[in-house]
Length: 423
Image (cartoon, rainbow, N blue to C red):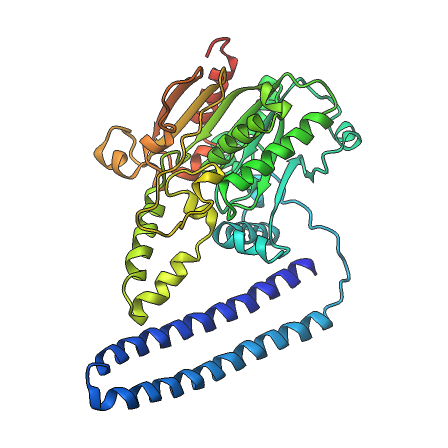
């Protein structure tokens, strides 16, 4: 019933947005007509009068639509009776869950969070994924007794996997059967079996700013560190796509806020993350600015829709990871400032993995489009000016963006680097 209420709220919000776009289209058309008629003095006055009558009439009709929409919303709220407020069970971390009803619902909610997650958060909509850590099939409260009961054989090392934009923790299960011969095998199960890392998965609202999710992840990992049923010697961080930016942000805020877990980080893996920005978002940013500058119904409406893409998506333009990149700035401005340079953690080894659609990573097409969403230079890490950290990069040919999350060649490289005593 909680999800029903949340979806119902989103539908009513969509009706309001549609009304706003219709109103914007009417006003844009009227402005263009008045610009033309305003030069003809004998009819300029009557035209303005007619336009005011038109505006009042349109406002009344659209206001009635809004009123009916919200009245229906209140009536439905009054008629909804919660019969079961238990949280839905997590989707099994198995590739054969794909295509099932629960998987479809979970994937849709994750996609909505990526597209309009900041709006869901502002509206306190129950579809907001928030920030959670998952172990097995349990979303954790991060209490010591809970973890002691769940993790019966704790090791001194753990791994935290952070998914990308518009995805959920299930995304680490892609193609498990074709890659590993079993639907339940993924990087987490392999690292637990091969190297003893106890795996946890982050689940978060990708539509919020990367820096907001970074702070939330830093706080969640701190609670995990304090509640873990054994002394932790090492925390491994692995982020895919936006997840790599969230990991960098979490490390930054953990260090600046004095969180103790950051001292346990030895290695950070970033898989296909847009540290220097994503081409698709750069194109969307440019298109939105150009369309918004043209006052026509056919441009104002798509411009408004583009401007309403989530804060998380907008952060992908430059690879922003801190609050300073958006506080007090217009994210839609064509001449927006560049992103803040955020140092990596001293003494930590960073591994940036990229991919290209072509089997030869050096092929011109592969260099141009990368893995479809992120190009190789951007996935190879942020531009840094010094620091006591080691960086390794590796590019994989013939691998798409989402395949980096469970590809056997990627895992082989991760294991090799983790198994080596040096950097």
